[in-house]
Length: 543
Image (cartoon, rainbow, N blue to C red; front, side, top):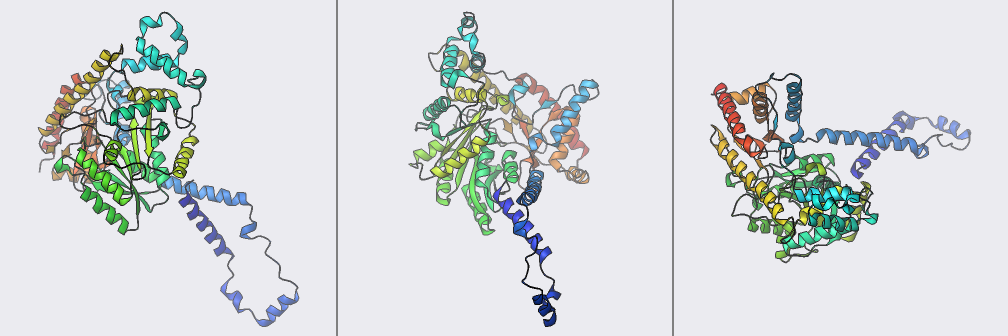
């Protein structure tokens, strides 16, 4: 368990025990005759039981119990809005629709609460699934029928990957960082993307990006006096992980008026304020493209952030899982590692952790649980501890490892699958861009709603300017106003969104997050339902 909790519990147990065995004040007032009598009885005998002579198993049990209680408190503080109460209610409604068709004014639940593309109808990339299928069942590679069913480059890639796995045993444990050959392929993909070298030894393959974030929080946070700078609004993984590991979230607010801009002056202000309160700020999390806000950072802005981290000695935690999801012509994705290296900063200048996942992008393979973190700028002894934490989980799943290598090394020009791959990829991304634009326009057409452009990622984060009567009704119901709105929206339309209060927001403002993932042919119906509900809601609570 965590060291800070252990120390607290040791002090608690020791203090409690010693207080029970302290001599009463009256014992100091005994008469000299009493003392003489005691002396006459012979040498002073030690108490039969002392703190040091207690069975250590008992102390360990007490320590474990109290530490577990502290951990439970941390778990209770941990919240994860995208799967919170609204979603639980949606699942109950879904069961009701199955058992009582027609019981609600809608016939299906539309989960716009989470970035889970394939659950909303997105099809997987053919090349990726062909390679996975062949790696999962390698005996069919030698069959003649396979060449009629699978593309030649998928077959070749499967053989190549199987040769990287010891004994071609895809169902066996791998190295705790992931299969070395797959990490080599990912490093090559990173180098091709950035134009700077990457090292397979810096890569830790994980079951999606989330375990990697948890791993870094576990390493960075020693006590509640350790802080992590986090954007507000932010993906709840960060606030939940910081709470779970007993640290302090240090918020910095994105500027909604400038398209959710990240202003270094705001970050510096929050850093100085935290330090003045005795918080040791150890890292900053930056999500680019943004979740839930959808902004894409400009290159100059990224340079400012890198310079700030170097000056202040902060670890830069770069959440880059939406790097393929860019919908505007005037912005492009640049990794923070590329930015840092282009500024001349190397391993000794800045500590940087980059997160990537197979769950997002155009691939959307959420259930395959693949991802990685690239860890640079840490000393050898720290790297050893990172590996130690990774080894506790033995290894990430092999299918996810294979997918991560495919995402970073898709078919290239001249490969048999290249044209179909590009058609699938571009078709998905262009459709997402159209859906984002349609929903953005729809939100901005509603009374009391403003919505910034989705430059990237998979979400819109519109702001609700709610009537005072609606705010008072929410207060009477003991819920946040945006949660009140989201619950009413769900009950009326079957559309599931996440209240902005689950992501954090400027006090006194209200938002909700809505994915752009429902299939394009369903977007008009969603917009129609949203408009009808919103007009009715505003009329009901009009001041």
